[in-house]
Length: 402
Ligand SMILES: Cc1cc2nc3c(=O)[nH]c(=O)nc-3n(C[C@H](O)[C@H](O)[C@H](O)COP(=O)(O)OP(=O)(O)OC[C@H]3O[C@@H](n4cnc5c(N)ncnc54)[C@H](O)[C@@H]3O)c2cc1C
Image 1 (cartoon, rainbow, N blue to C red):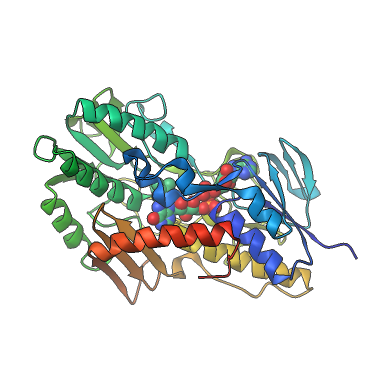
Image 2: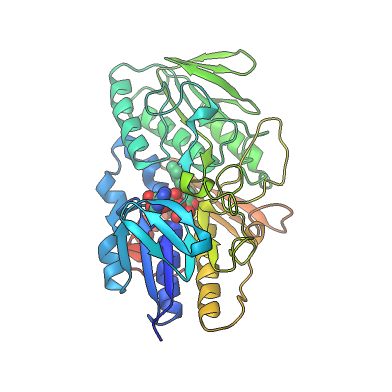
């Protein structure tokens, strides 16, 4: 009997893990194809360092094809353009692919429409893609030649607050290194209801700890706010307050990819895929979604919308759950793995240039039993070590390592 066909869309944290894990679960007795719009893996957590020249694009990416080749997985560098779910097929820029099981791991795209003046041709930089981070670095070089005040933050609806804080503290560190700390006012702008909410509802003592960090670094915070628009050199808040700047980096909200949005039988209004705790879609038993592509319900209401960060750790966890469930289905068993996003552990390291904070919690979302933030220089060293370890693990396809 020919092997079952598993088609994976996307080759980053979610797609790479799901493709290799399902292959591993079935000892290679499965026909796995990955279709990805990017032919490289991008280690997004290091994008916070790119603008300062601490990393180059080659340092934080690797080509996907050799990794998949080494594990007998077909790799197609193409974009999925239409999901024909009733026919178990996906149209791509490289042709039509049929499947027995589909894994959607197409991640996010920036939603610059939320605030006029954002985006590649706008007035504030962002670091949420490789291209954006390169662009932010070009701006940083220009800024150093003619420095002035700096704004770092996130817009209403954003979810990736860890990266905003990391960039804030790295900017502060770089300003000190450049001898500019006393000349430049650094301001943090965020829709979070309080400092340290982080899009996960906050952690014990988080607000105090972040407040202490900001005070030590002489950073002003404007939280619980929304941005109306960004002019050249001026950020205007919804209440009309104006903040002048020479350099600004704002994290925008994310949306799912258009190819998902165009499949209303599985997508929500943001283009994320509605899934069960098995990571099967609500509509199809043989169609899965993992990582940022999977929809997660925001359990709180805040004055300004605050999203939930779907970070690397839960993305890998979702991909493993999906891989085990697909393997079970192929063996003729029921999908037995269940893991709700809210119940996954939160494990994250927030870098601050030469310092940082380790975030550990028993659950991503409240109510929790345990949650702790551990500040100190060891966090910076952990992030450096983790980057090296993760890139080694992913490049070699050792996705079953922790
Ligand atoms: C600046 C920044 C810093 C971060 N820092 C951390 C951190 O410190 N720790 C942490 O755990 N997480 C961090 N994250 C989050 C982490 O990057 C995400 O959890 C992770 O990228 C999610 O992986 P994914 O595979 O779901 O999606 P993505 O990484 O978005 O990958 C999606 C893949 O799908 C491909 N694709 C898109 N559209 C299509 C299409 N139509 N057809 C085919 N392929 C397509 C893309 O090219 C890409 O390869 C950070 C994110 C950012 C942006």
